[in-house]
Length: 148
Image (cartoon, rainbow, N blue to C red; front, side, top):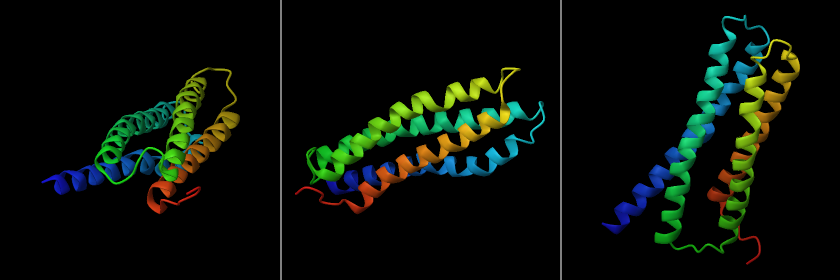
């Protein structure tokens, strides 16, 4: 029974990773369309970005919760190098997510905003966040023994 619980936690952990990372890849082609979006379509594009950020935040809660349980129930300790590095990147990504998307998305709604500059900033923000998430994923999958 304990093994079934552990495998179920791994499954939930992986599903939450997919829900956290996957939607950001879908935003990349949408960024290109922002430049040509009419004033009537722009709010729906921005709502999609907001939804993606919210989905990532909430699936991140599941990700962290299952991760904590996996460390408690599994063979690793909190001092395992790949867990420490994952946590460091996690805290960086949380800070980045909290400050990166919402202010930029709000500026789109201002009449005097430079739309092209905001689109470029949004593109960079999505790529930086994806790189952070993919780095965490790499540590969780490869589990390198960096300073053993």
